[in-house]
Length: 338
Image 1: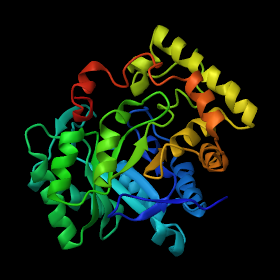
Image 2: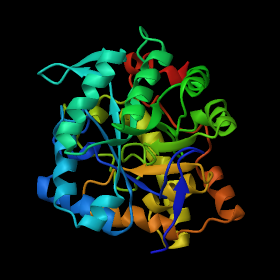
Image 3: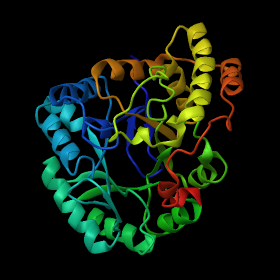
Image 4: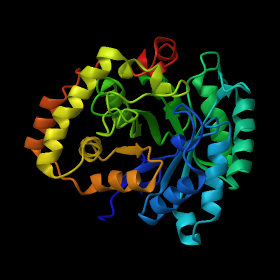
């Protein structure tokens, strides 16, 4: 496989062109997590392939995901363990029953969250630390300022952001150097292109894009008759409901024709499209198994020329998706959507 790397902003590290999103390995938005041994094997396989960026959140499985990553790193060969860069989101509050209670971006909470994360990961520093969402009751300057203090103390290496809009990005960047903004971006989620992407490029901040396959919707593997369990986020997601799902899967079939002409899978061409959008964009692939990881890594070998990109845009226009990416209550919490 061709080794491809990209810089995280003007102040961050160079990373492999694809990152591994580990959320689905824990009981969280998609119901039950993956089998533990397979999850660890998938992380090991990613590191062996050259992947450097592992993405998690301290609230994924209420700490389960960080413990899993910590175990995977401890059991990996030393050289692979040392190449890993762990990106952690914090601030989401959860109850014992798994329900969501809001977000906490207070400086004292930032440091408390970091202390627990370091313990669970078994590391002496966090490579990239970011608030999962904007706390509406705490100025972003205070939250980022607290992370900057952790940087000065050696507990954090770099500061990231997640799901915030242009004004918040600029205020954060005026407080401390920001390496990247983590936000949903993919063929059917193009909202960042109008205002957010120009802002990050103006400030030298990269994008780590999650949801590049829209939670499996445009992976080419999601069937219209698939029954989702009640604890799977997608059972309530507007894009997976009724007529919306029918319309969205029609887009997938249009994309499949282009992928077949290239001799690649739907997932590979969708990931390759995101890779083509700029050297400042690093897609996060949410593979829970080694076979899905291998498929995603194959996207790095897909070359899209101008004609290919035009065909993809014609098959899946920017505004073609049916349904919002979250239910209305969750959309209202996103600073990036304001």
